[in-house]
Structure formats: structure tokens, C-alpha cells
Length: 280
Ligand code: CA
Image (cartoon, rainbow, N blue to C red; front, side, top):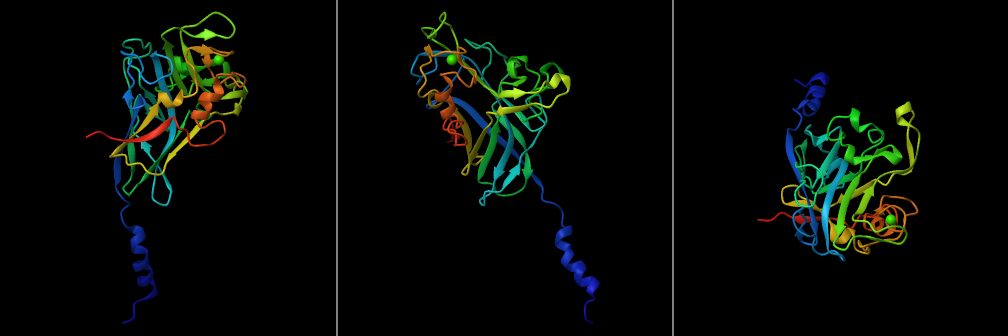
């Protein structure tokens, strides 16, 4: 007997009815280094052009994806915690010990799941997506509740906050010397008041797309390298504007770090981030 059209269609449809692939856990490690040395709060940061101690090192990332060998991106479903929610992760490399002034808790991993599969690369974006960015820290759950990561002058958040105290202080081209060289990255040129219910748009979002075509979450981790980030920056001097670089469009201290972050010239791979193999 010939198979009926209905049974043929049913047979063809069978694969589509198969159980969806299982999820696999993923844990993506991050490290703060200067060259090959780990950066900690309790001893001077090696490898900078000016001896300096760390006082803060935190950043937000979002849109974490794994890439297959064709370059297709699969979003990592984040496991909700005090460090990650709504697709946003806070990485925190300072533990309030030594010269650091933040919080005792630290976070150096993105934790979540992806559909089972073979992945060969990693992508993420540094920053907080709009409109989540333009909310009150006082009204948000962790990790968006940190006033210390607030960006009040543009109604948003600091995407990267790295602060260092050079041994001899910071000499300013204009004004009194300071103690701390601040790197505060965030969106600028923003208009609209979110606290009046207005939409906010920013002429210079300053979010950084990072993409590593070759990355194994099991064997590798991501390094943010301060020696590379501040290559071309004299941390003992400030050329004008805010003390260090607080993303001011006219701040003479921003172009050097923006270049290392891939922001100027725009949309280049940021050299300050790289892949490193896990030890042992
Ligand atoms: Ca400056």
C-alpha cells in the first residue's frame, strides 16, 4: 500500500517535533591585568608609565553572545543575580581593600546558559543599553543600583570606572594638583530628562562592541589590560577639563584612552581587551 499524503507529511514533520536541544551552562571569566600581572588593590600597579595604585575598577557589559564558526551570534541567557539582570552584567575588580574605595564583593564572571551547541567565539558590548541606562540608581535593583556608578551630568551610568592614584599625584595644566586620575566612560551629548518621563538620546553613546572570533569559555578568559589601556597616557599629568578623562568631548586626556578602547577612530576592536588562556 502506498503511503498516504497525510502520513508522508507527518513523517516529514517529525524532525521539527523533536525535543528542543538542551541548554548548556556557560561561565565566561574576566581579569584585570597590567601586562601579564594581576591588578590588585594592595600593591602598586606594575607596567604603567607612572607608578600608581588602584582605587576603583568596575564596568558594565551587555549583549553577551557566543559565536559559532560561521560568525552567528547566540545570546547568553544570564542567570539572575545581584551582578546580572536584564542582559546587563557588572564586573567589579576592586574589593575595598588596600587603596580601593568601593565594595568588598567582587565579580569576574558572566554566568548563564546557551542552547547546546559548538561555539568558537565571544561578543559583548561595554556599557548599559538605553533606556536601562537612563534610570535612577535609587529605583533600580542590583547591579544597576550603584550610586557610585551614576553619571549624573548626563542622566545615565558610568560604563567604565577606573581610578588610579599616581605616586606623585596628578599635575594639572590648569588648577591645583589632584590625587586621582579618573577614567569615567559614559554616553555624552544626551538630551531629554528621564525623570520627567522624556526619552533620552545621546549624540555620543560611547558603547564599545568587543568581538573575539576565537574564544573558548572553557579554556580562555577576557583580560582588560591597564598597561594597554593607558599606553599613551601620562597618569601623572592632566591636560585640562576633568581630572583624567570623564568622556568630555573636548577633554585633551580622552583621545589616547578612547583610541585604546576602539572608540576613536570609531568602531575598531578595542586593544585594551584581549583573550588569554586559563592557567593550568
Ligand atoms: Ca582631563
